[in-house]
Image (tube, rainbow, N blue to C red):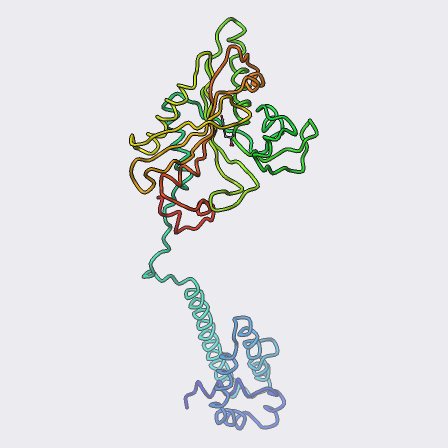
Length: 384
Ligand code: DAH
């Protein structure tokens, strides 16, 4: 047993020090603690080892070194000893104190190490783990079609215009020669919203992009008003208006939200022949095939007269031989030209409305329209 451990024994055992020192004399006191020192040492080690946090450890320290701690009490007791004993006991207490401090520091260090260890483990990075890949995104197939349509018509000198999806009754119907209570309105099962326009009629989610014909004409007239006023001519209107449209409709080939692209070419000398040329050219470029026939099938729309449905026929491929409807069209009705703020005796032209969703289905061979709007990444990723 070393001197050191004996001293620690002194430190730990002497709770009622003063009284005991005086009663038993220094030597027996010292001896008894030397004998019990192994035990005390363990106690001290346990007291520190049991301290789970730094603050617990500081409390345990107070038990030995604090104001009313054991060592402090021993120090106070020294005063009552004979000079000779004072020296040896004092040295022993000092050694005990040093040993306690060493044990304390050891535990402090252990706690700090453990804390660092926990922190490092929490922040650990497995650098061998493969990173989470971010797949590059891509445009939706219908967006690809829209871009394609815009590019082709832009190359033919058409402007591209955007319009509101929440539309007034006048623009959606009345301006297009489709007055209230006219049976032609039932061609479109329209969504209405709980907001009334100035005319007291609820706004609708536009069932087609055709309102943009009149909106664009108004903006065009305004833009060139000065020029016309000072004797200049009004430039031709050549525009396409792609966008979202809405109808109460849902099955494999209809979705309540779908896309349309309106086209309008209006001037002093624009004819049905131009419509045929422009639309045929568009279809051949869009489908990248000259092996394509177009058919203008007589139809009815309130805003055109005469009106035609445009069908295309592929001469080869899986759809070869079938006539497929891709657009409605016609010569703009004089009543509509008037609602555009233009003289129908002077201005004439054609309009068409096509379905980009349908064009996308044909181009990529998709047979269910709903696939476009399900958001299934396995489907969409094929178009990257
Ligand atoms: N707006 C029509 C529809 O949704 C399509 C249409 C037909 C647009 C003839 C036109 C047109 O511009 O001239 O069914």
